[in-house]
Image (cartoon, rainbow, N blue to C red; front, side, top):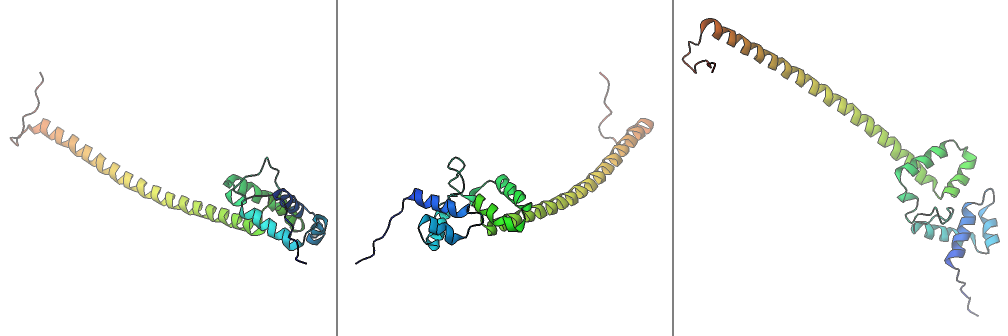
Length: 174
């Protein structure tokens, strides 16, 4: 007799995966037995939901179609910050509840640290550029002051000796 293939509704699959993700201290096999499917099938359904960007651990009001990879930077930062205060033995439960893999969390931490390092390097580069521009500004201020002093001296020389160069006559008052 051929084996009958049992079809499960998407809602059933999602509820089963939600039970897997929020199982607490229970092992996967116990959850699978409660649901009535093999543990490998639960993992298969979980993977399928994640590929579609669904997190069954979230309520339908909180669910976003893009999944954790599509979360905003603020939400990723918040999740990373909350994970830092959790003891190692409770981290797995936290990750399941959030619908995040540990590898994602580590990737987000690494991205944030690299971002901070880039910002620090950019800040140091900005400081160097500012110092260079300030030196150039001081040099130009000095040159401008020298030019202004020469113009004042030239004007005084003309007042004392007159315009002997035969150039343009001094302006007359009208």
